[in-house]
Amino acid sequence: MKKTIYSILMTAILSFLLTSCGDKTGNTDSYNDDAKTETKQEEHREEAMLSAKQFEALKMKVDTIALRQMNGYVEANGTLEVPPQNEASITSVIGANVVSIEVIEGDKVNKGQVVAYLSHPNIIKMQTDYLNAYSNSNFLKKGYERQQKLYDAGVGSGANFQKAEVEYSASKAMVNGMAAQLRLLNINTASVGNGTISQRIALKSPIEGFVQKVSVKTGQYVDPQTELFEIVDTHHVHADLMVFEKDVYRVKKGQKVTFDVQSVPDQELTAEIYSVSKTFEENPKAVHVHAEIENKNGNLIPGMYIKGRIQIEKIKTKALPESAIIKEGTRFYVFTVEKENNDWSFKPIEVILGQKDEGWITVKFPKEINPNTKFAYNNAYYLFAEMKKGDAEHSH
Image (cartoon, rainbow, N blue to C red; front, top):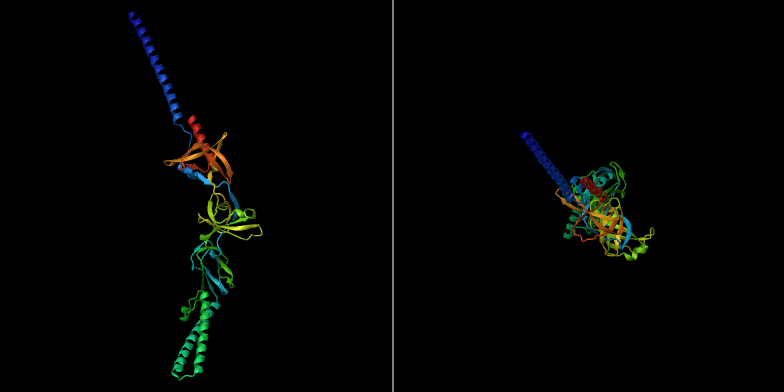
């Protein structure tokens, strides 16, 4: 009986101990879960993360805050042009057939480089005529020198000497004239004088530049002075803007110009006015303003349409493109950028918007920012969505 009561008592004590341990274990698990949640909340920060591949695929543009002319300017449109001395038309000085064409449109050529070869029987005839005249002149020269010696010795006739002198002088003039014609055809007169006759002549570029137009075909007969090639030296391309009559008095030499090339988007160029025309074009009633481009690149081609702004006041303010700004509720945000190893971190920062102009908006920051801070210039909506997606994942 005592053993039975002892067994019941031990069973009750053991059951109580197990229950107590079970409660302690359950409470510990609950505490750990709360701690983990709190830690996650502490670790979570509002930001959008992009990998290097995402950054490249989105064509992200990152830079420090821009200082931009948002007012105090004159709008002017125009084209890219080059000075007349930097354009060249290549023609033939004689009617001939095109034997070969050595360049195509877009090729870079140096000054004196051959662009085509021409051939014609008249070219050969000019050389043979020169050779005959050259040989005859040498013969008359010897006769003249012989008559001069006789005349100087007092045994020759003065009339014979004068005749020889006149004939030799006339032959020299003829040879020099024919030699000048051959040089216009890029023919070496010394070689012709030695009996070498060229069957073709070379057309050469008079300037360094790029072939803009080829107006001839192989085998084609070309008349003299017909334009066959057009060469343009794009190193001296400049902005040619048209300023309307109402704004002419505000424009002067030395002012800065910012402009966009319509066929090359997202590329802002700067220039400085070096010449303002003194005469009006009739249609439209405007003057030409020429500006030297300061940040040229290989994509600038004469004839491209440009849209520019001439700065008449030197007032620049902080501004960002519209694509850099996102609105949430009544507030506006932009994204600061930092590179973390191979990834990119984008964090929102509040801004106060100001004047809008040509796709740009002036911005002010409630708190002072480091001037070296970099910002995302585009894809703000995507970055905002990516950030919210990260928030949703953390909330789970």
